[in-house]
Length: 407
Ligand code: AMP
Ligand code: MG
Image (cartoon, rainbow, N blue to C red; front, side):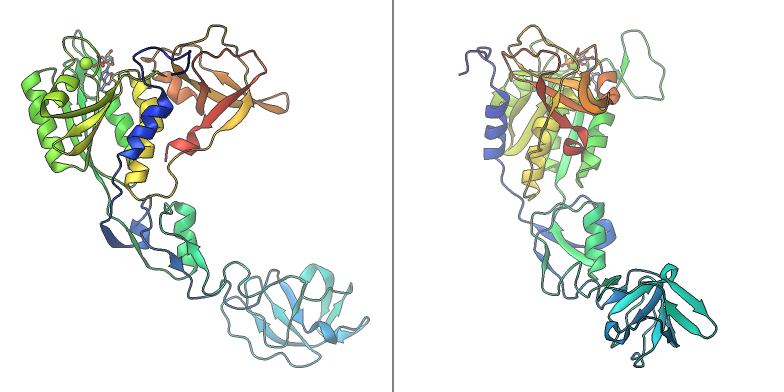
């Protein structure tokens, strides 16, 4: 144990390693239409059966010719007109063809002169400047070669990948089956948005944070709503969740209060793997199994839900879904703040990367309490301060941009 670690609290790295060790990667696959596969993970390599582009084509609006035919001070006859989508005829020797961006080059043509570089009249076309051989031509296979592995099994399908697969004519993809994830929020104080708040109540925000976080991952969500702070109802809800889903994620009820029942019910129904991490916010994070179904118990505090999902649940879910990559990269950025007092837990400050005086720095939201959800919406990433460390303004700190962790 690092001398800075708080006794009894598991370091974040250890927790993550143990979480990932226990993941049994999904094997079930299904074939989906390309348009319905966003967020899914490829179960097979995809090999291109075509070249992209399929033939040499023009990168410009202009005139194409055979480079060999070029002579200064010559007027060329325009022997054909080739818009994009047309099938060109062989280029007559010594002539040029009118051609447009994306149009296939005719046989014999190898060079395109942009229209701005010619003088075109009824009588023909004069080329103002000597061309270079092959200029303004996109050669066949420049983007993708026939037979190339375009995406490997384990690749997550984002918008770019959908477009890439479409570009090689793929209409259906073999992906891993979507995990079924049950979510539930615990707490007698919770009220759904749209209803009036009575004394003692607050709106349920974690449910919506979790729904949003999960929707980006291509999962099937079983939303079990709110579970009251009651042992019997907690037990019933967890049994239902564990029997219907591949993984259960809850929020709240994992601290040490008398109204926190998740941990005791987990110990009764299943097995507690670990509890209490050296992470801030998110200390009460709980991991275990209920009737063999993995269970991830997030804290109740809204900012802690956001942090622990991104840092612990997301890698678990991605690995489980068959993804090749589940850990996000970090960058290092000068801090526009200081931390004078070392903390016992690894701190995930809700922070914002900004440009200041022509360089990028990271500033932190002033109130880092785990109940302050505004901090998550205000920021664009986490500044990570390891246990025991202090930070002087201007010093490089670890920064995890949201775009690396939230979809
Ligand atoms: P707990 O871990 O259940 O003691 O909850 C810790 C804090 O988070 C308390 O202030 C709760 O009211 C709050 N909290 C728990 N669940 C939610 C939720 N779903 N939405 C918003 N706040 C919550
Ligand atoms: Mg509670």
